[in-house]
Length: 327
Image 1 (cartoon, rainbow, N blue to C red):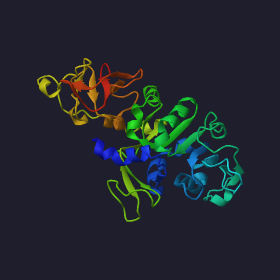
Image 2: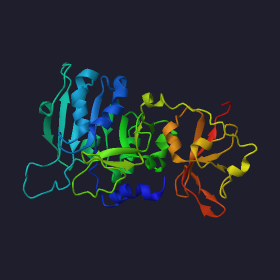
Image 3: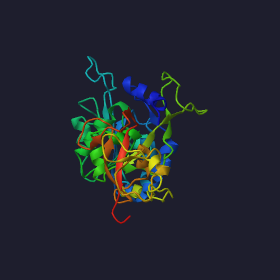
Image 4: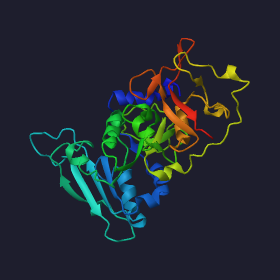
């Protein structure tokens, strides 16, 4: 995807403008597939505004009884915690346990406890909530997404399902989780864009604006370690062949691998290394057709194998894959 299509999100990241509120319908479209995963789970929402604003919190309250979730704990962030006078807006932790009802819960069922710190998702009070077996559901701040995934990496027994920029998978904090089978794309939003509600002060320069004011932001995906998300990651042969069409697949200057400019062009007969668009991640699963070897970006990190350069010209970043033996 070209740089111009990422401009809106990149500008927001640079400005630390992180009030991107995931819509209720986007959350419902994804989470309704995880009913088994949600049952008996203690759900943590560590990147929230006050209850009533976060649609993650609202959706969980609506479905806790129906889906059998054990509890919900959410935290709010208050950057200006250290003020001279306590104005009642300090960060808080809210909690509600499942009392056996089958109907919906409301924000009135949440009990609040003030936090000593600012409520940052990886602050000691919030991170302490990530006990083994808990499930994190949230939209982390885009400008802090790599830090969020670093935290997830510290908790191998914690599951998560989050909204993020698709390019996050190439970061040094996320790619190890991908390689370990702890990070795959979710089940919806495979078109690379999602609508968000934002404050009125944010510039309306996205790729689409709905009547309700929600803005479409490109290159967004769900990321999760839940195996339920593996279900739709089947690979269909493209009908393309490398043999006899070698001129369509130039080799990189920097590594013995071929450039595949579109996932529709992945050849069915090639067993060597291939650099493919990052969008393949939406159809990739750890035990599937392709082994993920690393990335081609020319950056740093143990999984960055080379620069995607052909004929002295830098190309787009690529996933480096090869077909599994016998596939």
